[in-house]
Length: 433
Ligand SMILES: *Cc1c(COP(=O)(O)O)cnc(C)c1O
Image (cartoon, rainbow, N blue to C red; front, side):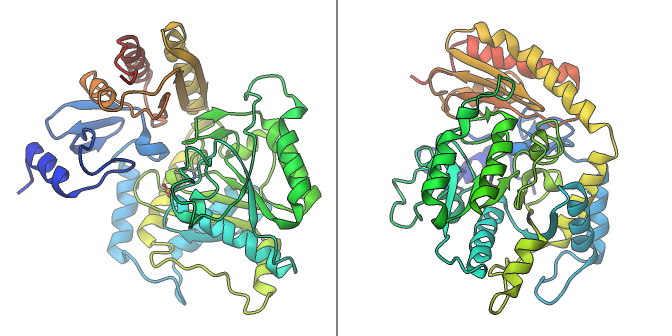
């Protein structure tokens, strides 16, 4: 028998830990019964317009017939087999497809089970590459402040040192190098001085640096900041000059979210290593991929035993691969660019009135991402409940109220979503006491 909303809530309180939350005195959580299109249906019957795509993932909305079908068909042949010594159609087809749609130089795909792990994999690839080239001392990563790359210890070590809680884990985190975050906005006039900090650090430490790692164009969970494409162009050139690899973490930006299929396309550059996750399966299940060039893969393979030292148990899970293939086909089989552009326009128009509200310091939108930045942190004990009361699902963090709805959201839902954000901010309820 299904649990009642009250039972779910009670059992949750007793036994379940939620992300970035205390176990005792946890902030409110809302039991979800089902989800379809851009609607989350709560166990108490209320319906919410989804503004989050379940953290960048559900780009086609929930419960999509094509994705459901792909998953069912795959389930009837096999749910999972180990990937050591075995292979299968869904993995191979997905790898081919990813190579086809990403920059030309990327040719080799390593599957893993989550974004954070794909970042760990990318870091290990960069280090093994340099070791194979006779530079085993190149083990440091250079990154930019304000970044977010995941929660495993490897990925965490390249997250912003302040918001990434490096102090707490000092003893186990490797020490990497942090350049200033890009200052020039996506659509502002370019200033070449913006890459000075990164350029100087590359110069000073090049013999110990394996790779630069960054989120191209949109820094996500580290502050929802949109920076200038020229920054990326210059970083690519600097990496080449110093013999350092470039890792692009497109876990959040991949699959159209910023208006391009991959955010690197805004600058027309190709990374040496690319991390994909989140929207890869259209929000159905956890799967990630780390892509690299033949040059990197061949160098690693030529050294010693030649093995790349990673291998998750659920590597290339067939259900996830089959769903990812269907999700990519679904995306590319429609005029997705026009759709994302329409969402951007709707977000710009809908969030613009927030600019005049007390406490609002900035409003910005790029692709299907909209952000309202405040002058103080949101009260997370009250704000989520207020959004739910108004029929929308928005989950702010820090001083940021942001949305990245499914691409399929219609104009009316989008307008409602934006209006309710304005309403909650205007009510004054978001400011922490
Ligand atoms: C979410 C995210 C990750 C981590 O992915 P998980 O699947 O949560 O491990 C890494 N990098 C970026 C840019 C992300 O947005």
